Length: 107
Length: 126
Image 1 (cartoon, rainbow over the protein chains, first blue to last red):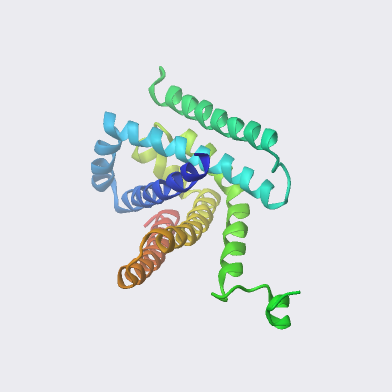
Image 2 (cartoon, helix red, strand yellow):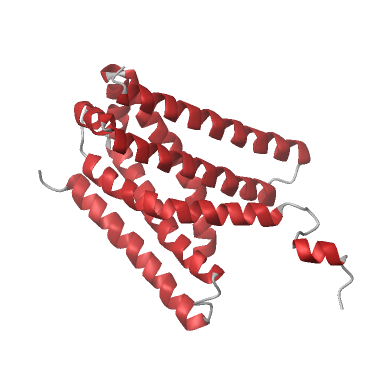
């Protein structure tokens, strides 16, 4: 379950990477170009997509560390990998919550 | 005993001759991305509600532009390697598979060039 989610978030993050580069291009191109980017990014849909990217990046990052530790041959037994799996989910969920608070929270 | 040629055994390559390199490159890029992603998360958090002027000032700082470019290049490389595996796993038509693999390479290359060009323009104030 987490393993296919690692792949799915990875593919989704490619789209995020493209949009991040679009953001850089928009800043380099000037205020008018940036305004059209900001109009989409500032909408409720933009916020939803941003939270999706936040969750995907945090999950892929934390689960990536888990995979690297496995590659070292550690933490492969069932109880440990179950515990680290839940840790990864908790980190991604908490981090996404923090992003949401920062995005929607008061000034 | 193994039926494999002793030299092939020592080189550790499978029948495709290239899998080990790809696997290792994916790990190396992921280790490189660990600190860069942590930096990016902090940068993104500070820019979350930034307007055009804020973002421009932030990226005009050479260190910020440098770290963002390092993150983008490492991420593009990592994404290219990852998408390659996904395409090889799920796309079964040979022509379609090769077309997609080429498209991913081309897009990653153009995106890297575009990001570098734009970040240089911003730091040079052009």
